[in-house]
Length: 268
Ligand SMILES: Nc1ncnc2c1ncn2[C@@H]1O[C@H](COP(=O)(O)OP(=O)(O)OP(=O)(O)O)[C@@H](O)[C@H]1O
Image (tube, rainbow, N blue to C red; front, side):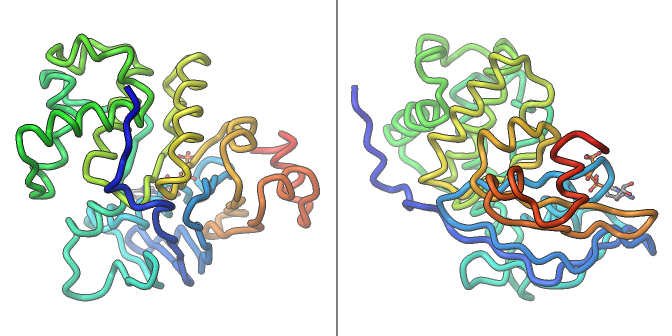
């Protein structure tokens, strides 16, 4: 069966950060980060542990503010919309900018189909019964999981392998039709085969959804991304972007010696 996805916005939306700084209490962890994450591309955020990659990612869909001591300065735009504009609802932002976490987190007792649809309730999206059936198939197909689970839709999500659970979480994120998908080390808990499947899924999705991925795996950054940003927090200073640009340039001819050392495994 050939599926078409007429309601999917082709190419996602462009996300851009302007002079973004962040704090936990008085501890400044990011310093004036500027980055454009273009529609239709995968942007990889790389850098040593503690340089602020996850904090930056969480700022991009307003999760940073869930930490009581957290604060930030600067601006984040989704195309022309300022996502921190006063009066803008957080749920509107989260609907347009989804997140997939390091550890697969399906609702273990819910069925596979219910997991896919779980985000609709949270965002108040109404879909008819027939529409829900189609949506489950569409999202599982887009997450490269349909063929493995099409006869098991009523089984619990927790019964799947780790790699399948992560693709189920991707399907769940896709069900609310986001423009952007943020991924925080989505393969770090997976074996090499499952990692490959998730990477293939990222490759298939990138023309439809803008993807930003944090990864510690340099080969993965090189395989999945078209753009790359290298973050570094030197000697107790807040994290900054040392260099960003096309992934092949960052890996083959970086302009900063520190980028060269990091991508070649000489520190971090
Ligand atoms: N909830 C929090 N409360 C206080 N400090 C935090 C919190 N989360 C992160 N930090 C601090 O912010 C800084 C950046 O952390 P962050 O997790 O963003 O880095 P990272 O580059 O993603 O690291 P890793 O690669 O290890 O995940 C670190 O100094 C960290 O200790």
